[in-house]
Length: 410
Image 1 (cartoon, helix red, strand yellow):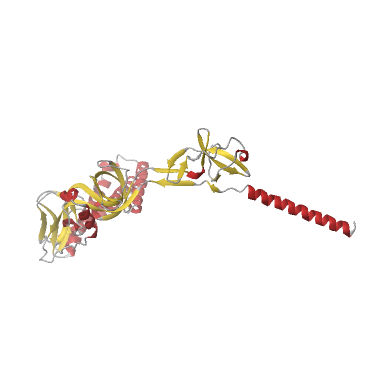
Image 2: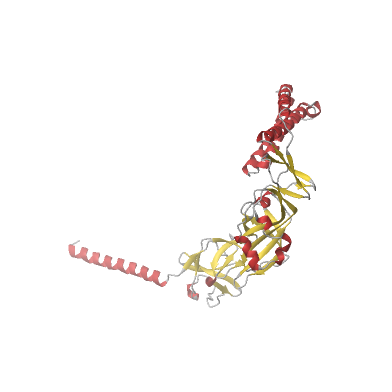
C-alpha cells in the first residue's frame, strides 16, 4: 500500500470519527433534560420553642442565726404533711455524716440477717438466684447509663442482697456472723457520737418539697397567669430574680405545673386540645393540655400556656427549657411539585431510564409548598429512590411507553 493510499484512508477515518463525535454531541444537546434525583426525605411537623416552667410554689425561709448545718429530711418531690419538719439543723457536718452512715449500716445489717435466715435460703434455687443476679446487675448498669443515680443505691442493694443469699445457698458462706458483729460494733460507736439537732425547720402547710430555689417563685402568682397580658407574660423571660440568703427550699401545692412559651402562629391545635411535649433535658414525653393561646399584637407569634399533672425530677429542677410539641412525621421520596404530570387520572412523573423517558406513578403521602412526598416502595411502576425525575415537559414521541400529557401539571 503506497503512501497516497494511506493518507487518503487516514483523512477518511478522521472525517468519520469527527462525524460520529459530532452526532453524539448533537444528540446529547438535543436530548438533554433538566432532572433531579429522587431521594428519601423526612418531614417533621413538630414545633420547637423555648419556655419556662411555672408552678404553684411557696418559699420556705429560715433564719440560721446559729450557723448550724442543715440536713434535709425529704428528697425532691416527696409529700410533706402539715406542721412537719422538712430539715434538721446540726452543730457541724460530722453529725450529718454520722446519721447517714448509721442509716446505711442499719440497711446492710438487716439485709445480711435476712440473707442468712433459713426462711429465705430454704425456698430458693441457685439457678433462680443466678438469673436474678444477672437481672439486678443489668438494672444497676442501666440506671447508671441513664444517669438515674437516685435509683442506683436501691438497685445495688437488691443486687448485693441476692448475691448474699446465693453465697449461703451454694455454701460459699456458712453465715455472715463476723460481718454482722463488725457492723454492730460500728453502729454502737456512731451512736455514742450522735448529738441532738439544735433546731428544726417546720412547714405549716402540706405540699411537695423541693430543695432548690431560683427566685422566680415570687415573680408571678400562679392563679393569675391566665389573666396576665401578653406584655406581662413576655417580661417574665427577662426577669433576673435574686435568691435571698434565708431561703432553704420550697413547697409545691400540687403536682400541676404549666409551661409558658412563645411560638409562631399555627392552626395545628386549639385551646383545650391534648398534646404531647418533650424537653431537651429529658427524653420523656409528657401529656399536656392547651390552656390558652394569646396572639402578640404586631407579630406572627403567640404566647401559649400548657398544663400538666405529671411531676418528676426534670420538671422540679428546671425553670427554662427548650421544648418540642410532637406532631406527625412523614418519610417518603421527595418530588418537586413542578415535575408532577398526569396520564389520564393517574398522577406521576417522567423519569430518565438510561436514554429512555418513562412515566412512573406516585403515591402522595405529604404535600409541602413546593414539593410532595411519595410513598417509598419497591414497585417499579412507581417512582423509586434514585430515579432521575424530569423537571420540564416532554413530547409524546420522547416517551418510551404511554402518552405524555405534560400540559396537565399540578
